[in-house]
Length: 223
Ligand SMILES: Cc1cc2nc3c(=O)[nH]c(=O)nc-3n(C[C@H](O)[C@H](O)[C@H](O)COP(=O)(O)O)c2cc1C
Image (cartoon, rainbow, N blue to C red; front, top):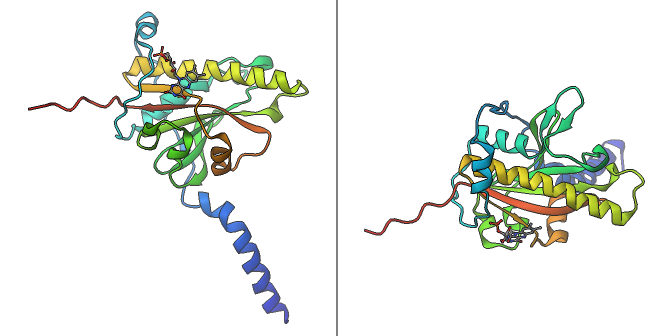
């Protein structure tokens, strides 16, 4: 085999092997989110009164400003000097990554850049949970603990703090949704191995919970 043929053969093999990894996010572009609207929102006591789980979602897409505000509320940076977040984490590990699955694809929220990093093109919403509504709701957040960020803690402690830290992020999402009149529900009923595969997670990245967000579906008016 001459060198040209060898080069083509190697490129074909590499192309085939790399295609599933590179191909999935090639159509998605990074998204710079608009600044969060810090002046928006209802009074806290009213928000607490309205917080609830809802399971009936409109399929209408959410505006990018709403997604920007939602993700910043979830676990955005609220103190630029220290890089600390709207949600606390044990030892300030900041180990909870928030992924967002939309009809277009899967993104990772980058709190430092306040942007979305493409992970995989294509619609994986159906894989984000066992509830039927997940496939049509515009946004499914997936809370993933990166155990590699949790130092030398024991495995039970990593699991415990990953779960507690996720709870704070989820409650921030609940409160934001109550403030904005959005429907939301946090979900533990997930086929985690299937979703982890679709998300290309490493073995030390653990899916803790998912949370669906969307506009509430309006009741159909009967004539
Ligand atoms: C850790 C956790 C897991 C949950 N998993 C699911 C789920 O898989 N599917 C679902 O429809 N609701 C799920 N929920 C929502 C609860 O059913 C809901 O919070 C509860 O019924 C109380 O209702 P409320 O949130 O309106 O107060 C979960 C809630 C929590 C805290």
